[in-house]
Image (cartoon, rainbow, N blue to C red; front, side, top):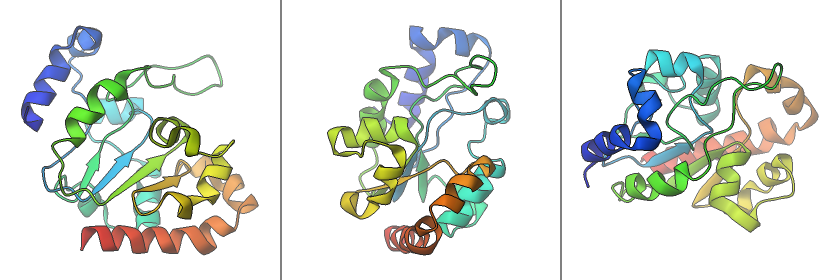
Length: 194
């Protein structure tokens, strides 16, 4: 199945009927020559409405962390952006943020999409949902433990926290993230794209 056929199949899937009825497109990008895959949680409301993933303050911070321009990050021939769910999941209870990605969604669709990306050299796992799915029992007991052990998962995976501006306290408590991890992340991305 080609990437275009996969997108059509996603929209036609009965599990996505509600989103398709709203006129929402599955929000992911992938080109057959992509070298880096970014796996996050699920699109936010603004991303779903705009049709462009990571085009917000978190995306700007992520590009800074990766050492790439917004233009390069959104080039599907360089980066595939493949979240755990391709649709905005809705708002959770008051104060809890967005709902989590739907269970089973990534297991159903990721192998089909990633199977069409033969040149991937690095997969960046943002947040606990992506890390649990891809690392399984290899991940740490906490998100911080998993991210701190990033070298353990190289060269295939690079775990990260979410680049939300709200994570500044976490970064202040974990100076190794900026001092040690980010330079290695930029180097790994540069090497994968070379």
